[in-house]
Length: 492
Image 1: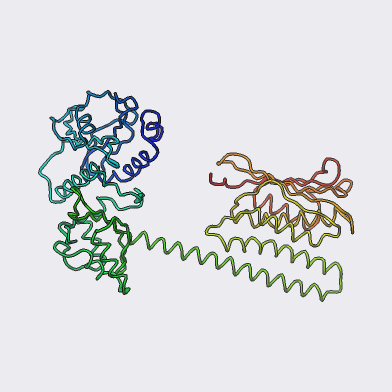
Image 2: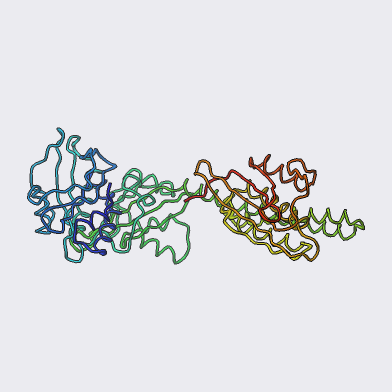
């Protein structure tokens, strides 16, 4: 299905600012559809002025649809729908005409001109399914009157409100709770859901007949000057969205001033009980903070262990024992780097490129030769259960390359290369660690070598990460280690 941008730019003479106004209207018109119990179709005259193109469509959540099929992209000639012509040419809401019959369903059709800066950009066709018409309740009468006021504001060019882009998914809807206020902010009608939300805030009486702003301010915790501001917001004098918390309840409110004839006659207040949603959000925030604090403490503990090992290494007379402790310090340090990174994130995933660079710098400091280390390619974002063992694997491989590939004073290079491949379902990380040093000894078998570092690498890569590991002579000179590890795909 073509987008509204494509249809407007392909078929009409509207500019970017007009298109932006239509987007603003479409972000709001779910409310008009729900209050009207009707389908809405936005028709815009084509460039040559002989046809209309439908650029957007909305179905109501509060009643049956009048259109089983999508209308977006349809073209109709002028004259076929006289009510569209009258609304466009005369700039007024057109309600004349008998109901139409569509697939044995009677449909009442109305046309609402969409005005901006004195110009009519298009027409909204409001289509009401009459099959289920009955005597309307007080709620339905309030809905219909509010819809009529909003339609008149659209025809006058005073709705939607400029600069008030609405998130349709996050903002309250008519069915969540609706309050109708008069010009003084007194409640004329409150839907059952709206009344229940206020009861959760601590209201013990009915809302009708009370000043909504003052009542809301009394229910919210006292915060000095904030009370006056809250009372004004809840009175509906300006288009605003805000939240009120009280009595362990939280409600989200959206005020819509009504000015169908230019003067303020009252307001609509849409509201939603978001108590449980905010409670879960707070629990998640607390959980995230706890997890980050745990990673921070683990990092500190690991650094303490590393410091103790260094202290012990200085007191050992045996060169072999001192070297073993220094290797342990580097292993502990590589894990500490991962936990330090995790302590700064909101989830259990880390950008591993920074970790790889820090591990490379840490190991290069102990190189017996003058070896330069570098990284090419990108590791990307990895889960913690991959990042932790991988940091240890890189530490062992780099340490092995530095110590066994180069002698004291020898120059050389160790390069880490990382490439992500595969699909979202089968993503993989291909890593190579290559040096230009002495190369492998004659008859060396990396799968059977008893070196502790290589045993750690094999165990972590094959046993913990489910990958593969191989060590081969590099082309020309040196050694190349290849790792193939399954990973979770990065979000696009």
